[in-house]
Image (tube, rainbow, N blue to C red; front, side, top):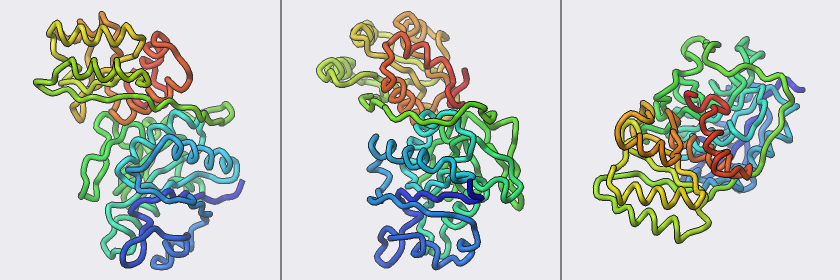
Length: 336
């Protein structure tokens, strides 16, 4: 293994160059405006087709885990340059697919391109290289998938993009940051996952046929029923519910959930709130959900909830196994 970090460029604002802005063609184009980057022991891999992160797909995710798999034994850690819009989705899914991960995988990006004088990209990138390079900088290993953004190191599957303009673009509402990044980088060891002892491997099969619907007053439950029942390719339904997991208690709404559940389609209940968790059963509505076998999403983010469901569906589990597995935290994504 080389004492280096592999930077993987998938696209996004951080790697845009030129006037007008366009994706960089190689590392030299990114680094030439910032000579300090040449001092870091890094190698560089660039996707053949750089994407806006809004175009992230299951195929893109599988390609990304394959790059890490092929290079896992060669590097101390990995830095993934990624657009901010779907970074939390990518980070969450990677945390499920990269099994027995014993090295840092750090996603980072920028709100403005690094060629701009006030860009946040350079600091985000350097911080990420330090964390991925761990022993080169006397930093403890963080054996998980993280997001490093504006002096914050967050568990990726606990993170959300919560601001489209502010340089503090990401937050982790239900889990404290993994590190304090200031003049020094202080890893908070009791917040990180333990280093696994078993051999690293990746899983590459996911099923993206998941539907997410956010409830709102006046939503006709027949719309949900008709859409799900008439589209047999939908294999799971995720409901973003009110408060601590509440839904309407009308006969029509409960019957709709019962009909979908009877089709062996798992239904996951996650809260619309930025922080907090689903509590089942607490109120009358959640008591009815428990009796229907609706899955308690606890304090999982929508990004992690969606990708965890894709992951479990990809393993071919039936509805009972999915219900059981969702109560278990795979990589620190929820309180269990």
